[in-house]
Length: 398
Image (cartoon, rainbow, N blue to C red; front, side):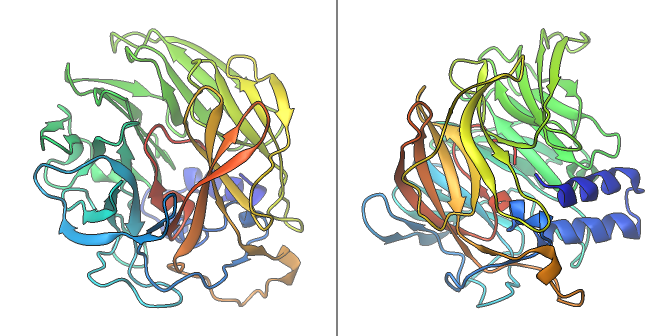
């Protein structure tokens, strides 16, 4: 996180739900989602990296994701990832059959499908303020999304086609401009949060027992115990914070909450397999020195104390942005990276037009050993921003 994005989020919280200020803030946020740390500079120029939103996988050689239309009712294999499409890119043409704000899932074998049941995201410049999140289970065999038909969240088993729908309706107005969704490994629990909150609650939904637990909003869910009784949350504005709430059920319980406010801004990984640690990278960006980050470190979620700080080696030398994602083992965490050219805020003309929809951006995933800092390349994808691509497992906090 950076000072500019913090300001935008805080302003959004103070604005009425549908007033012009909020729409302006949300539009600016979506236009800059590709720039992450570069928000501090208020500008990133993305190099030309392709003209379609097709996704290229490179672990075993080049392979274009083959479009297969809509997601079949059943018989779909495990997923590699999912990505969101917006059809008015700043440069290049939209992909054939592009669906504005729609989610596409890509299987490990390279087949790509649109998730027609998932509510499309909207940007204010089109017809409203609304995000629509999607999550993938760690094994890639289940997805969670907001069902346009049911008006609430739904979990779908890709092989059997079985759908499980939350008992309570969730108004579309609760989806906000930046939303986060986490699906438990077994598909039983769905955690939802968003920014700005508009005083709406975040939710932890037990899909099996059909009960809902309200959570504090603005906090990003990054980890959940197997029984759903303890959740780990992260916050990035106005300060980076970590929070753990235990004894969540029954839903009438206030729970036991501990939190720690951190002195610096960090990008957080999901909760580590040990259930008490996250990987962090300090965000050192400023308005005049964007795209700067510190070394990788492990952090205790209950105390905020760092240990085992190490420099990352093996990334492409032009990497400028890093998003920590799924843990692959107790020793390796996924680092999703981009390479963009950043400019200081002083070099950005005041009248420079904003980018409504960015062009496709190459993103490379690495497995980073948290003990040694050594990175090994996993795959390269294409999507329009970090917020528009989902990997299996809990998300990190950007």
